[in-house]
Structure formats: structure tokens, C-alpha cells
Length: 148
Image (cartoon, rainbow, N blue to C red; front, side):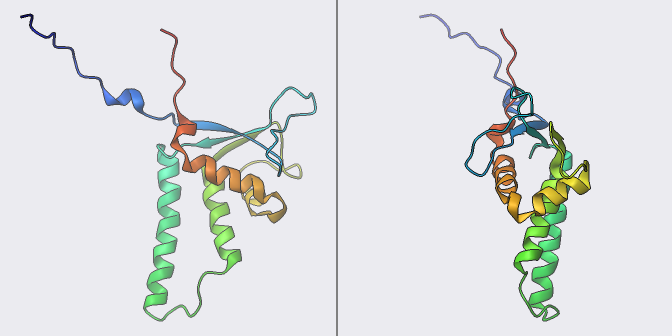
């Protein structure tokens, strides 16, 4: 009988997600959009759920929610969170996780304020919905495997 060969165990780090990911910008019908040249895709680059930036942004959002719940429980807040407040908090989280909008801007603006404006705009809500879903799926941040 031959002895089984002992191989080194697989390091689970090979399954780690990338620090960033790039989401295609789609219209409300789900069609990917392109720059004026018709070839360059419009995209949004975001920090992944495995990044420190995302973790800090998510923690801040969770803290705000916890404080609101505690205030309600203690009778310090009379009303539940309004739809506008909820949308603003989602926009803040998404903006904090956004690195760049590639190939586009919003009314000539760029940076965090433009990201927040984008994710707050109800007429562009499909982009915020897509960004929310994109962040929620760690598979979108799979590292590109190098050819063997």
C-alpha cells in the first residue's frame, strides 16, 4: 500500500476579495451606458465590503441607526425615520464607498458631493439601487486571477 502524499493546505487568502470593484452604469431599463465615443463604458469604482473604507462607512451608518433606535426606545425621538432621512443615509453610505465616476459627472461636479447628489436624486434612483446591490454582492469584487 502506498502512503498518501501530504500536500500543504490551501491558504484561504486566495479567496479574498479585491479592495475595489467597478460597476457599469446602466439606464433605468438595465442597458449599460457608454461615453460619447460609443465604446468607453460609463462606470463607478467603489470600495469593496472587504476594505477599511467600506467598514468605516458601514460602521458609521450602523451607529447612526443604533442611536436613532435607542432615542426612540428612551422616548427622546417621537417619530420613525422619514423616507427622506433614510434616502439621505443610504446616499451618504454609497457616496462614502464611491471612489470615482468614470466617464461621466453630475452637472459638472465630481467628488464626494457629486456622489452624494447622484445617490440622493430620485430621478437617478436606479443608479443608487444598482450601487446598493453591487456593494451587497461580494462576488462583484472577485480578484482577477492571474494566468497560470
